[in-house]
Amino acid sequence: MFASKANKLIQRLRSPFKQRRYGGVATGESSPGSGSSRLVLGIETSCDDTGAAVLNETGSILGESLHSQKEVHLRTGGIIPTVAQQLHREHIERVVHEALERSGVDPRQLSAVATTVKPGLALSLGVGLEFSLSFVRRHGMPFIPIHHMEAHALTVRLLQPVPFPFLVLLVSGGHSLLAVARGVDDFLLLGRTLDEAPGDTLDKVARRLSLTKHPLCSVLSGGQAIELLARDGDRLRFPFKTPMGQTYDCSFSFAGLRNQIKMTIEKKEAEEGIKQGTLLSCVNDIAAATQHTVACHLAKRTHRAVLFCKANGLLPSLAPTLVVSGGVASNQYIRKALGVITEATGLRLLCPPAKFCTDNGVMIAWNGVERLKEGKGILPPDADVSYQPKAPLGVDLTSQVKAAAIRVPSIQINIS
Ligand code: KG4
Ligand code: ZN
Image (cartoon, rainbow, N blue to C red):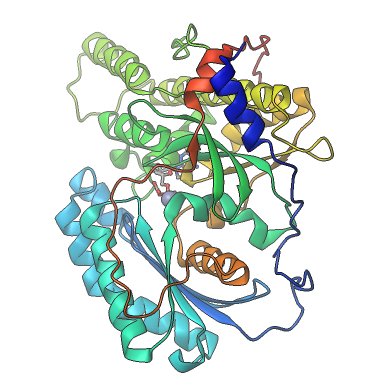
């Protein structure tokens, strides 16, 4: 049960759903395909992708461009912020120019520029922000600062009608969180990672296994490599413990799991008489067990979040929805594990295609469009804006979720 203060907060937050329609403009007239002339340029540089896109108000992608630094960071064994900054500097002008050129839009035709300003790597965010401010000042147009996680959460609305509120699981290299999306700038945070994000864990495990030396994985991100190898692996060979089994909230933790995996790798290396840096014969099995345990952890916490939302009336009774996004959401095994939960709880599961799950300029432009339509967070070109490497998402309900201590019924995640 909740303490009364917590109860009051939830009551207040449970305000009647303003079933805002997809593309919720004041007139309610806008829908994909209908004509509207406002155009937004979106710019993303929060981590290791330099992205830009031009969208119109109905969500049509008029032009886009993306430069990924993945290969460089794979070679250096992780993101070095100064290297990321330098690469953003080298590519941002070309990427923005390409997006504009492909869209056939002249900068003067834009209604606004939307750019990620939080959270992310300080040095990376700085490049996008500096470029964007000089662009909007040069062209005298409004600037819309974007929260990277809000943009991930709302990308699904670019692709199909998803009314607020909905539950969202965001899992990437930098983030792991569960939230209720109630509006363009209105989120309730139910849980987040206490240490690292699942994509980071998968990247580190892949590095420890030297998967870039695997002939099938040399250009894949850690998560992609683990998903690929897991297909031919036996997940039961290494029974890793699902994290936080005795903590009845929606937080995540992956550092302990990574340690379990590391110890197993060390043991197998000793058994096979090989050194770190050489591929183990059991990489497929380790990948399968890692992926399965990450999936089970995400599924269990998400299950609890669904039950918490249901107990507190935070989701509509008609077509309650779970949206899963972020780079890790492109993992098919993890999607299926979450599908088991949504099926058991009667939710609709929506995952944007992989292209829209990872970082790109489109999701930022779309967030700009949504904000422009609602008139939220639109600044004049001369506004003093700074970036924020750390930025929480929404109203923090994590302690209320913990206090509720909801026991989740056991569900077997058996995915072939
Ligand atoms: O959203 P994203 O492009 O960047 C941020 O972290 O914000 O996500 C990248 C992360 C990386 O950690 C990568 O290993 C992971 O997403 N990832 C995957 C898959 N594809 C990318 N993880 C699991 N399975 C995948 N198929
Ligand atoms: Zn991201």
